[in-house]
Length: 339
Image 1 (cartoon, rainbow, N blue to C red):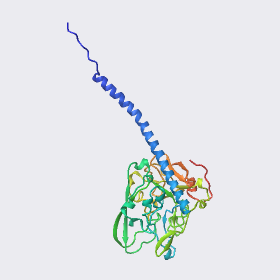
Image 2 (tube, helix red, strand yellow):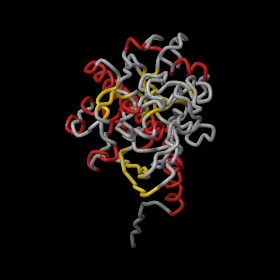
Image 3 (cartoon, rainbow, N blue to C red):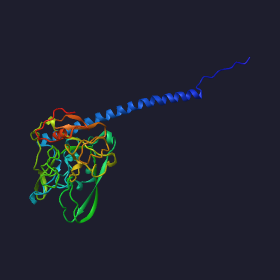
Image 4 (cartoon, one colour):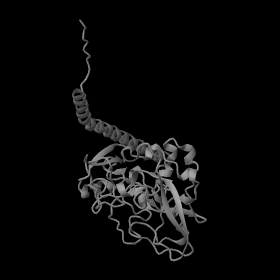
């Protein structure tokens, strides 16, 4: 009598059921994995904000003032006091304090940023980048410059120069990008082309502001305006130092929203403002936010460093009057622990 042996194994139906169950489990786990990754990126972002805040404090401890956003003479200044245009921004000045001493030594703050070598302009320290926006990249942006024969006609409300009448050469210059911007203040000084407007030297109400240069032989040798701890009369725990800058998803690496961070000619390259007229961006493609707005890619709000070195997360819906008080170092309107 022949014995029959039975073979154990999956039938096709059983295999399909198992595959279906695995698919459901993966689908259930995926949001949790994504949430954990975003939480890790958020923590990393906060740490980078803290490190940048520490670097600005070390600059203050060394030089007795916070790094100026850029040199920018007022239009009514004596011609001998008009110099320093297009020189590097505050982000180049903190290089020695973010373990970039050699790179920092190669920046000349009396020389236009775009005249520095590519290997100086294009270095992107990891601390400059928000992990949610550009994790694992070394992003470089391009600024189109125009070399001209005749002078321009003043400034636009953005603080950008009016194009000159005679254009003789176009020049594309590359430079490192950065996801954090200094607090230049609010809009109370105005933006009408007057010498008192916020984007001219010494007029900003924030902490990292445009300053008038001290000129010697046509070169900027030192800042004339200096913002110190004592200048923050509203209190160091109630005033923004810097925060995440708004860059729409469709404008990444594009001028004017995402300009090279060392570009001292284009104020939004390294600074932002807040207050009435400039709310925090509501999401990555907020059409009511502009190139002067603070904003973040992670949902819900924006990370800021305050002058005392602490970090806080402010909801995107934070009232603009509160934001204006936090951005203005001296308006005598103190905001306590708003989150």
